[in-house]
Image (cartoon, rainbow, N blue to C red; front, top):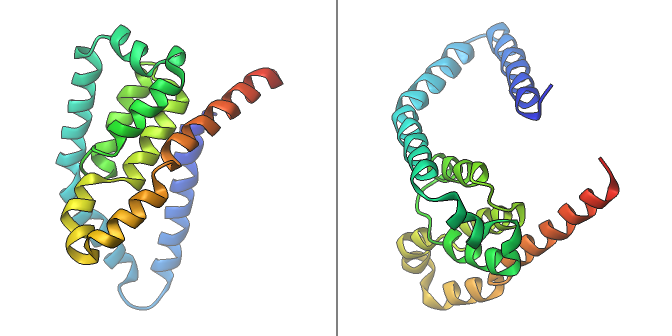
Length: 172
């Protein structure tokens, strides 16, 4: 069973188990859970479809050789640094970002670059810095946080590269 199918199976088992537990409780816990899920599905469905369409168009339109040169296996530290820089400027939440990461993965972007990209998106988050952190926490705090976390995305990319190399050398 693939990892993806295993994850889906685990989530189904957990959802069914919790659903049975909610059904057995007094009150409307089961119904409230279904309503909550349905309301959020309606909110995110079109956003998710749009994000998947955009990511698939990017995958088809951007030449794989170009992506491979800048972010592929041979890009090394250059790819990790570039992915760290780009990842910090990707706006939106996980429903926009992860379809993009999936498209990059399918375009054979190196795992270390993908790790750096995701980490930079999480740590730097330029849109959240501009919209929330600076107005709420001020420039001093923001500069301190960004300065103290500056090397985290490239470092995670390098560590991921070392782990990939180790796993390749360890055998099948």
